Image (tube, rainbow over all chains, first blue to last red; front, side, top):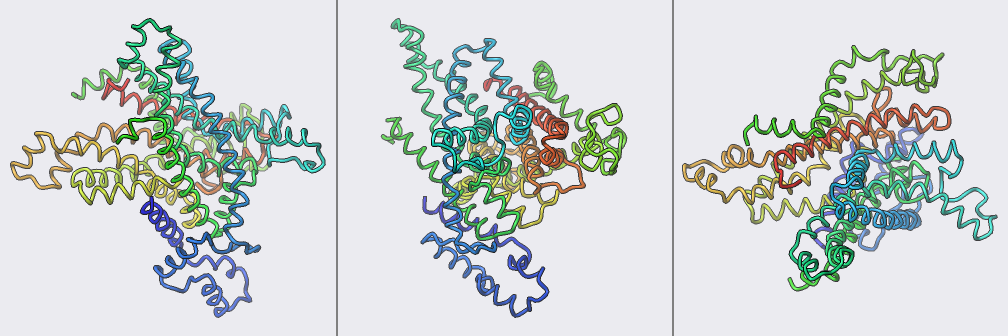
Length: 313
Length: 277
């Protein structure tokens, strides 16, 4: 855990210092009145004049108390504040899409395993392969054209309408839901294919086991065998996969939040990348990695809770 | 497995052959781009701005009146280039690190695999975006960055192969006749680990093409006027309420290409190792 965390900070730092030139150039080069002396002072302000290892250590010290520095953008707000105010939206969106993935992918995988080689299984296989190959941002565009432009059913930008403040509570909730449908659907789409394929493979593996034969031999109905004995065991490895899918979901949030103009961490990341707002980029890169680490840790804990065999060893 | 045996079994897998066909077709189109594209992909025609598909412009024109079909044909070249170079870099790094980790074991293995764990903590797309922002978006930079962030899976795979292969008799025999470490790694063990690498590489090309298109779509990949499937889609988003053809066709091209590589990769895997079916 700790070595990983330190490794993450080093990678973040190295990535950010790959830059040719100084990040303060962006603030100064367009302004003819900025003198060389002024430029030096600005560099000193951001510690950019010190040797690399000192820069890293001072960054690390601040990081320990969650001081991610101040943004280079004109508002100069603390990076931690900027990220934290946007983090909840991103996390909620990702949790919603994770739930959607589970609700769809597990039944899909189980059914296609139980009815192996049936028409249903083949159609699912086609869906899975096409799903793997579909660029989700393109699907987002198509759905925006269909539901937003042609049918006019769903809004295509932001998470709230302009008149949000004036709506009664129920209407404002519906408004929020309408805004979230497309982003959640699309970010779930990416993980759907993989998980249902994985679930199918697991289920097929479990059905072959001896204890399933035992259950059948003692005369249990097929439903009990599949849904009580097989499913539980096939579900175990899914926990690990969910943990592993966290970085993909978080990474994908950049695309969806940019397309749908959702004010989350992904959009902030994109805007900061475009503006070369190094402290914010470094902060989000770090937080993204920490979230991934937490996701994996949670998966490990859940796995140990559900599978007694892991606890023993 | 004999080569002819492999080809025979592969040819019986119709879906994989179809995937291979798509891949070969794309190669041909990319090679012949200057001859098959009906227009110059960068030729601006302000009298034909955002024209819908018609016999003159089969897939319509973009916001500068450029022919979409021609841009897509040249875009195929870009995708192919990015896919192969990026995957090449990833495979090269992944294979070397995986071979070293698996062969030498001990602290070398621990150090390399720890580094893999650290890299896997980063959402890949975040890492790519951050590096691209620093290095200026260009086709070479995105190839290198996609490659540099995509080698971890290969490392794990090759390492696992090496760990199981290095105890085999043929390796002991090679060592007994005095072969050095480098010779054993590259001449004796690596060829036996190439099968899984080949499959990963094929699937990797598909992944790299998807990533490139997403980056170009966000405006941080291939820069206009160089045509790429991703940056045509950007124009599609900007003109979402008038020009559906800008959004539909390039995405379809990406889908078919990625599907082709995926099916080919899965086909190779099934052929090499029928147990995995």
